[in-house]
Length: 202
Image (cartoon, rainbow, N blue to C red; front, side, top):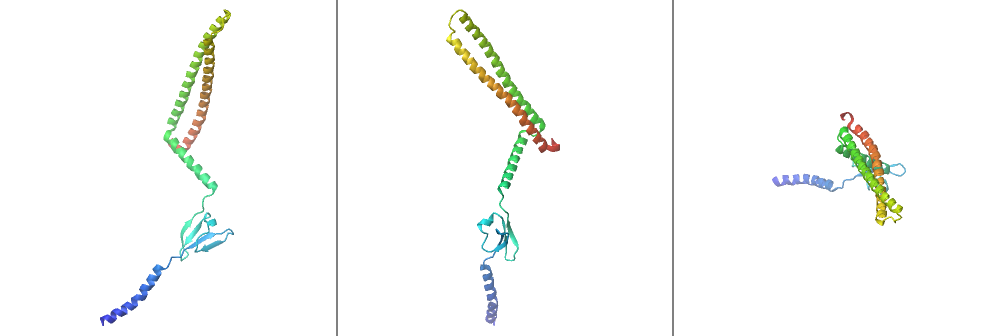
């Protein structure tokens, strides 16, 4: 009696187990939805052709429900815009790190201008010193010429050296003056941007 009942139970369970096993082994079918070159929406179980992948597509389950959306690849213009935004964000972060407030930015500007003024003053003092040396050497050379003597080679060489140093110092002064102008322009840009970033919290 017990054996017969067990056999009947087994006969009932076996088909169910077989169906479950078949369902488990059955591959999950996915549909890929994309738009082709003619603007037609295509459903395909084989995937998306390579030429349409960059345009974006959707993956659907067997019931037609969207389970994943692959967005279109960014265009060259979008990539350029994203790069520009990232570069601006990096520059803003660095600016805020260097100058957390407008007061600190203004102090930095004044300090840079002061350093350039000091360099200009040092160059000018060196030029004045060279001018005195040149005047003294020219006086000596004139005296030798009045005495019908050749100008000493050492004096000639010193005068050449002074001319070279003066040219170098003058070039430095021009460079420092230009750096002051560039600094004013750059700090004006920094200040305008910092006002935007800090807003009412400046």
